[in-house]
Image 1 (spheres, rainbow, N blue to C red):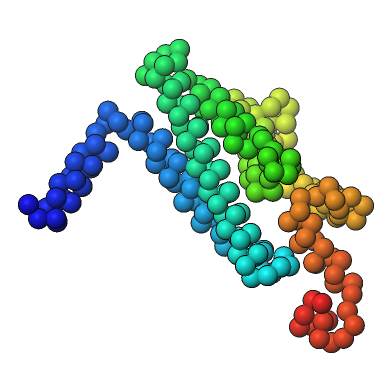
Image 2 (cartoon, one colour):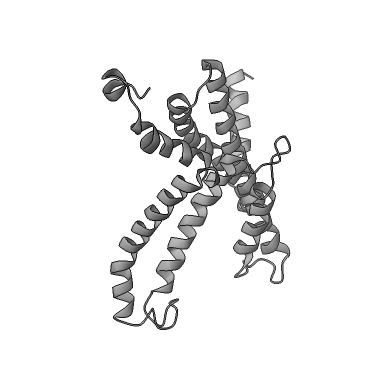
Length: 229
């Protein structure tokens, strides 16, 4: 038997397993972890590459190490969360109160467990919350708040809250809430940056320092136009 035919036999056997409906839910856990790792790497690598090489000091080797560690952390944590989340969903679906049927709050409980285990801890080395985890959680939190705000003003009979989901009131809030939210957010962050910069997230503080503080200083045409310093 040739090597190519052996490989084809192995491939066929593997595909027969992964396409078997009996293994679907378990294999979905594995693929969820895979997709979490891939997505985390794709998202973090270009972001870290730009931010580190533009705004961080140090040697090329140190910068490459920072990019690698940020990418690895993001990919690993999304993979771990996906694995835990889908594993808990699997267990609740097959061994919960109604075996074989997904419960209404299974996803909430699975997210709670995964969020606590993966993103709820502190670094063993520094004792601080890892900056990558902070960014991920704040990103998720902001989108949760926006989604809840949209649900709150949905017309009555849906998921809307009393009074603000009434016809007329809902439309007014939907129209004017965003400008107020945008203005308040920028007012708050600029005030915090001016008087409490150490309490802002490091990457945000670094970006704001570059734009709003370092723009106050120059001593030649060179660092007024072409270079920052």
